[in-house]
Length: 433
Ligand SMILES: Cc1ncc(COP(=O)(O)O)c(C=O)c1O
Image (cartoon, rainbow, N blue to C red; front, side, top):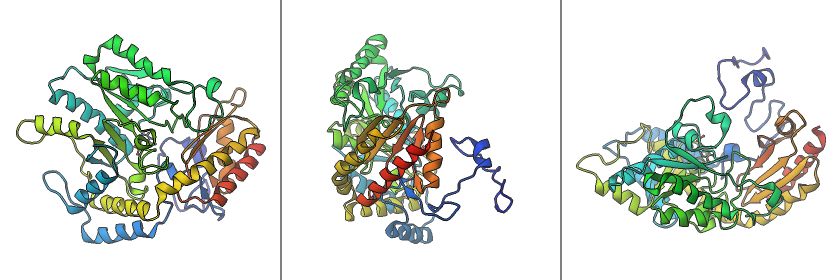
């Protein structure tokens, strides 16, 4: 370890990290690398810094709030900012997704959404509906609910039996049909019909909810086939099953609309969000429930508390202040519209890498891109990981998952910076073996 570093690198048990390797080869960030050169953030941190780093309005809102009201509980009490933020979110929510439950992260939003779905059916006298349906290659955070409905084997295999009564739809990744598609691929809507098979197997009366990411991010940018989400909606509706969209990465402008539900024109019953809600500045999540879901639970309850769920920091005042300032920034800078305008530029630029070494697929939607690399013989994931390190050393932050590079820049990215990403990546791909 570098003795000049004041920190004991060993003390921090890093999440989703090869700790042994990292601590031998540390790369520390303040968006300038350890050697002092600037880093272009091609991933908005972890898909969260949608308005870009260091936005004065958000910084000032947090600074102001911490001095005014640093903490307030929201159990049986309230403070104005939590109500204000919920009201602001209602204004941008699709359809009648007008009730907002605050959490502190995407994982908590997912668990909250699943619990609301179970509570909804029970409140309506359908307490037999307890099954939850996720999807292969789904990522829904790291709570027990999220890993149970999630479809990533490494996130699941270590942790025992997980939630009972969970089933999974097949994933939609089919490069043999859809490689190099721009926007939604043409092939694969029929994969949603697998839900009919699952319903036939278990009976609709046992199924509470289906949860999917409208665009799967963490397993390598899997864009839903044309018509797929519409079919899921139709089947869930036909069988009285709630549809949950996990919009933890697609929420807050990533596709050029407030939510993916807007982009695809498909209205789910519950939306889980986090990340871009506060621009990543203060941890916070928000779960949106449709009027009917909220009413069933709240009006269907006996006297007293209607939903026995919540977090010490639900609606935390500093997070709420950050959220309001973030929404102001998105609105006043027209960032969702900007993402929509830039999406075709982004698509064109990224697809120009089709002939770069190792590239076997490129997928784009909104300001998201996935670049799939051929795995190195006998060493899957090694090539992409080397690309990640090489890109960082060349001043570009990318994300890799398996052998896929995932990109999701802040919505303030310029056309010149898009060029810079593509040029840097071309050089990186030429360099990695
Ligand atoms: C779709 C999705 N759901 C849930 C999560 C979990 O969010 P968090 O890490 O804030 O718990 C993530 C994080 O990347 C995500 O991409």
